[in-house]
Image (cartoon, rainbow, N blue to C red; front, side, top):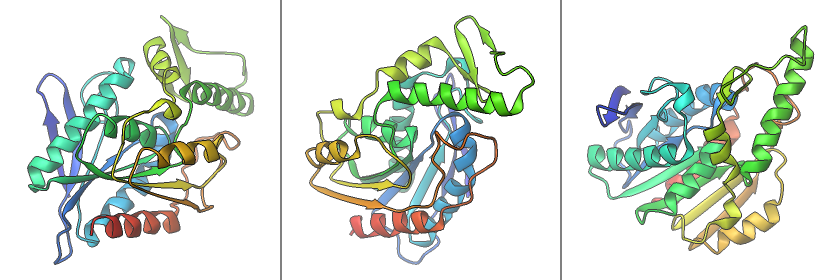
Length: 265
């Protein structure tokens, strides 16, 4: 496990690079794409364990923070969807250069899955992709975030009607939602992707998702091979607001590694 900075000196990205622990090195490098805000905090432990499982299976792995997030450069108010898509592309180039591998697999949860799909549609070197409870409609997602914050505020704040808002920036569960980020999110819809996003797609549903049947049909048209599984194991984000971390969904993590291993052969 090697902490690294990559990208440009003006906009550095922080990541953690994992070398394979197995004797056999897979021909595909794995990039883990985080969700945003509170879901990032909830999934951080799971992503660390997922990275370790991948290395034991023989994969090079890179997990990283988008610009304006975590330990990467920039302020949280600079968060921008288009920049995050560029960051994923930069991470793909980084793992390919570091591992000398030609193929890449993207793995993302919630918004991280959605951004992975969008980034994959702009490249031709993403061999496989795992979409775990992807956000289908960014507009619906923003509404879910606002609802989740309101429910949390009603249960935890003396004045639930108090909202932190400054210069067009709304605070949601301690994270800023700027007008630019909100606009970028609302412009996202997975059903509007027209290009192939990867040679193979694995979609996991672990909670309630809207229009998943329609999404499945659409994704099948954007790939050579599509697999879908419903694996219960995580909370429904929109019904369980709060600041407690998720228990690690081990069955889902194992399923992701097993599928990616098979897809890399």
